Image 1: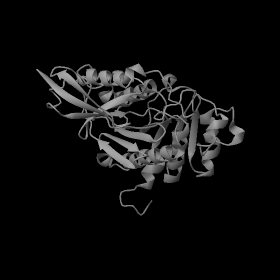
Image 2: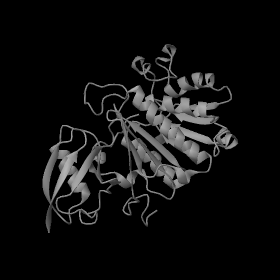
Image 3: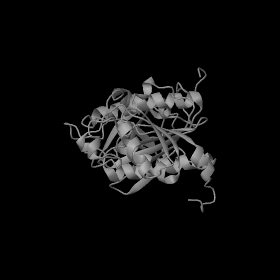
Length: 79
Length: 240
C-alpha cells in the first residue's frame, strides 16, 4: 500500500512530497532525501515529532500515516 | 558548586575522565572539567596546533604552534587548577587501550572515530558523552550502558561520510552548515557535555539527557529528541 509523505529540510525549511510503500525503510527515505538535496553533503537524521527514527524501521513500523511530515535534520560531526 | 545539593566534590575529584580530541570543542570541555573540579583527566589527540586554532581554543598559546594538541593543553590546563592532573596522549584513539576510565567524552571530528569510542563504551559499559558541532549547530548525546547508543540512529548518510574529517579549521569547501566551528557553539556544547558528566560522576545519571539534544544557535533553540534502542544495532542485538 502506498502513501504520500512530506519531507521538510530543517536547514532551509524547503519541503518535498514523495510517494512511499508501507514497507519502505526510513533509511531508504533518508537516502532519497539526501539525494534530492544533494548539495548538502553531511550526515542527516530523520525526525518524526520529537523522536529520532531508527533507519531500518519501515514506514509502517514508525506509525506514519498518509500526509504526515518527517523532518530532515543535519547531524553535526565536527569538534 | 558545593552548595548544589547533588554535587559530590570527592567523587568529582577522583573521577577518571577520558577526553577524545583536543580541538575547539575539546579545549572548551577541558576548561569546564578543570573549573568544575575534575582532577584526573586523560586527553588524546594526534594532531598538531595550527595558527588558525588559536582564535577558538582557550588553552592554546602562540608558542604551541607545531606542537601536539594534547601536549599543548597539558601545559596550560594546570593554570586553571594546579591540582588537576592531565595526562596527554599523542596517539589516535584507535591505537589505545580504553579500559579503566569512569567516563568518555567525545570531542571528535569524524564519524568513524565516534563509532570506535561508542563501541568501546558499550563493550566496557563505560558512560559516553558525545559532543559535536558545526558552525551554528551542535548536539550532545549521552550513551549509558543499558540505553541506545550512537550507532542506533546512524544511517546511509553517516556511512557515506564515515571517514570524512569535519575539522574545526575551515577547509576549501565552504558550506553554511558545516562551516568551521564557532567558539560560541563549542562553548554551549562543551558546557552541556560537562554538565552531563557531572551528573554521571555524582551518581544521578538517571537525570542525564535522554536521547539527543540538538542545539540551533541561529534560532536559539534546544530540541531534545528521543531515541530508542535499535534492535538491529550491532551493539545491542543478540550478537553482543
